[in-house]
Amino acid sequence: MAAALAVLGLADGARGQEALPPLDACIDAEVARYEWTLQMHRDRPLDAADFDLWDVRGVEYCGNIGVTRCDRSDAPLPCQKALAGAQHVLHGHVMAGLPEPETEGESLPERLYHTAWHLARDVSAGPDCAGATEAMATWCAAREANLRLKSALLAWQVGRYLGLAEPAVRAGWADPPPPPRPKARPER
Image 1 (cartoon, rainbow, N blue to C red):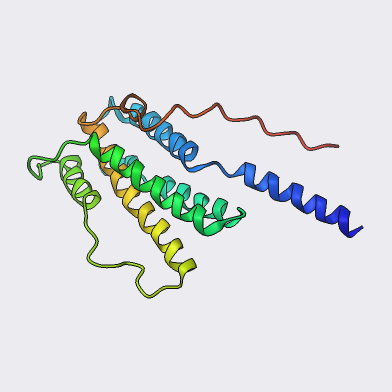
Image 2 (image 1 turned 45 degrees about the horizontal axis):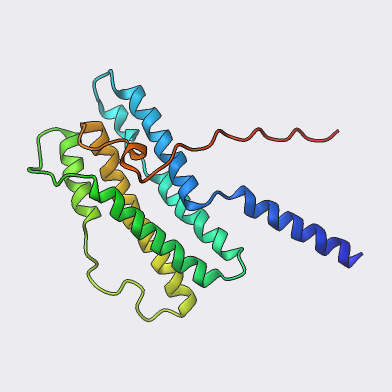
């Protein structure tokens, strides 16, 4: 009986791992979501109600999913180190396609782009994860990489709105997401 339960537990764990998308697939879906939202806002004037046009909560979700995938893996710390590295590389690709703002600008989108671009170019004021255990420092590094990636994607979103940035797929740092898989119907 214990062996059967262990096999079922392993199957559930494998299904749980499959249900969590890898970082690149998750970011691809976020980019596609933003491009769709941008199309909805293109032909109408921007007002305060549209401020949610620039939303990077999904990027944070992707980072958290990445950490969860690592926690469920056979080697959580190397996995989280690789996750931090992947987010750092993606941050660099995103920022490479964004022009430096010439001035702060007058409009809300221009001011937001100026601020987001500079936030994404930030340099740490010191060792963010100093004094932590290896496990905590590794998690902290992955989390800090995700926060920098969020800033870069916010700058990209506003840059897309302003016509300063290419679509992510054309720029080469994202792929079109796969179509959503149909959900299995419950057995009766």
